[in-house]
Image (cartoon, rainbow, N blue to C red; front, side, top):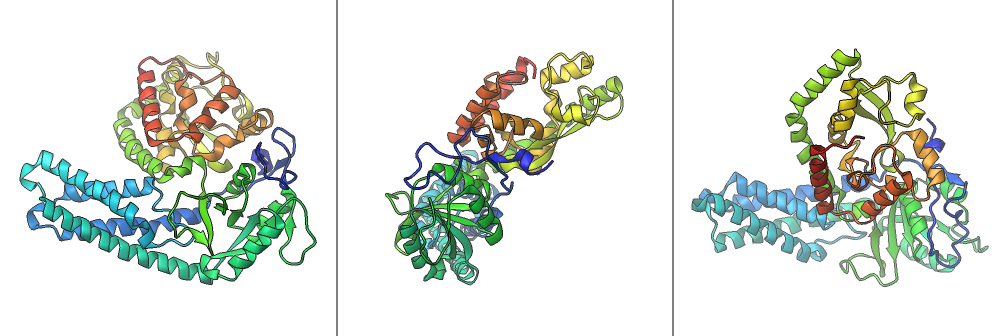
Length: 472
């Protein structure tokens, strides 16, 4: 399977800024651009030192508590609360020039909540270990001093690295304003951004950075210059989506940017990171939920898995598991696992034939597994591996992704989030041979309005639906 066959249409928005409308074709046209299916792994690894700083602060604070109160449950609850709250608030995602002092109010509020809840839980179950207000305030103060010091060291090291190894960036906006911004940032390497081009309507003939005015030029510049950042001086959601598909970190500079600490600026230009809708509220928390639930679920389901495997082996012969290539987040291919419910005639049929309910080749065991959704249980391993999430758009085969992306506007946008074992479309009955347009609409609505509670609700509705299975 080539990259082109699973490519994402060049996205455009309804509200392009003046002068940028010619950069890409309108949605729904046949012009397609092959986008590298990769994510900005740098942002994932950048969170590790900050997560470690939060955990170390909890350990140091707990070490200063009086001996009877150094309780493992308190430590685990406080650490878990701090990590979850900070991750959900985006405090593990550093800004352009992050500062521990700028983060201190947000860190203090969440640390206070985590420590108070942890202390209350321990006191409720073991009153003899209840922590007094004085000890709790000491622990919180120690936590804040430690986390500020460690985070300050992390941010200082990141600034030194950014100065020594700036990242290539494209600036999106009018050529005149973009050149002024690029010149200002180039003179201040501490921000770690090195502009290599301007994305605008057409070249202005001025010397200096080249102006890119077509999707092909953008594509070539991203690949040749290893572009890692895109800085927007104007609003253009279509181009934001395009650069996010490329795996670039996207920034909005200037304008009315009120949400963020004062330290988030690029030489006086206010800035904030533009993140995909799903990541906006914490994909780290979503991944943590997957691991916490999928691991025990797989262990508890082991007897059922063995029984299903035995039934398939006795009924349909060797080859208990069915493996199939599917398209995951950002177009990445992975191997999906299911219990085999029927044996395809050949690989071409497996890759291109739409599943039909009550296929006559399906045995009684296969029909039961499919109707009860037990054939999907091996996908818990896909969730643990990180190929999938518990909740998200259902993954599809590359052949159908290519077909549906040409037919249905917005279908490729489903791949902004990790694909899932179940999803909003599925709990509304859109499974199997149902409307692709409806599924696409539900999936994009889920991504645009994602929340952790939304995932919990969908999982509860899915569990309730298993009591009265309606088939897949």
